[in-house]
Image 1 (cartoon, rainbow, N blue to C red):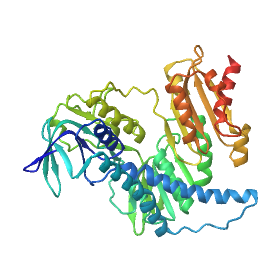
Image 2 (cartoon, one colour; image 1 turned 30 degrees about the horizontal axis):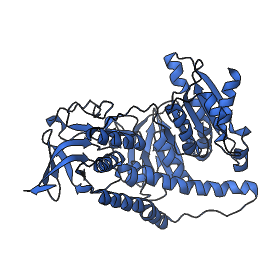
Image 3 (cartoon, rainbow, N blue to C red; image 1 turned 180 degrees about the horizontal axis):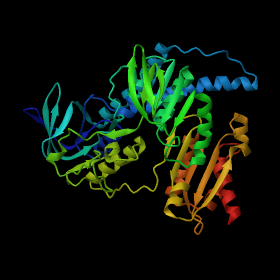
Image 4 (cartoon, rainbow, N blue to C red; image 1 turned 45 degrees about the horizontal axis):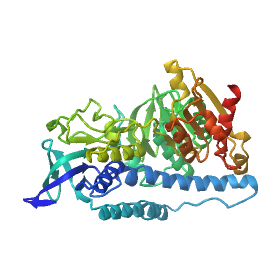
Length: 463
């Protein structure tokens, strides 16, 4: 690394320290490339670690503990009413979960020789960055990787600025447990955080502009989650648009569609995320950015500028940390001259609600839209011995296969642990296994993983 007049010369400059960014940086360093990461917070982990995936899953674990204690009464185990102390909970989340993982990433970076620079990176050309911050400097690079992630989207037409209106980042700070909480958005962020606050004691209302919760998976997989939400939430307003928010005293009044008005102590806006590409100076390069802010890349994560790559949320949907991490490794290997490509067949998705919903590959609804002929099997967990021992027979495992070749094309699972179970299905689809392969694989008994084998056997019986 050459220093002079606050100019650094490196092989690779990574802009953004999230999962895509640090995965790319670590892989570049492993392959012998001199690499720096420029991150506004001078830290690794990004939104996923600090204000997204990790803290939300930590709080969902707490919600699950509370729910398990409640369910235990059905089998004769009584713990009494739970009491939540916010200060110890915040400390545990910040120090024992987020802090520990952050220290681990910093240690890995040091071991691999990856320097993390604090500041805001702005391209001045296809070979140089300006770093704005407490210590302004320039970085000359052979290649750059844009991994700036995404931010929570805002609702057009709802301009009210108030501490009582939260995005997902603010909600994860647990400012308090509001008595009445409105969640705008029935996608995975809204449902996950809605369940957290409902378990902690809030009376939760969800407003979703479409006619169903959780877009993405097939509707039969969403049904068990919807039934659970109907019990946990005070009200679910489908096909409803929030037209205005007005702060009145210590409350926020929300107007729904026409004339319906309700008051809430806090409002959580959870309507998706938008890529962060504005203000990066990409116009000084040949990289292409569309009207939504998505940076266009090919299967090797290359932009239209030969020197610049992009990975993660800034490259569009699906905005998932594990996709970003895979792209980051691909980008690092391509820069190092290796024959790598982001050519994965599936990117599994998981919603960590109660029950969890996970899916990968082709969905039944996609097949119907495309006019594609498929075989579908559903195995209800009511017939699962392990589900019975857990008192959770509300799950379903679903497989989708090609009727001619028997190849597994997609899978969906709803139930506790679905996020872990989907890995086997993703592996099966990715490696082009057939239904017969899955059915012939011995699964431990009694386990929930058996439901994949059972669903595969059901498909074989029809052929």
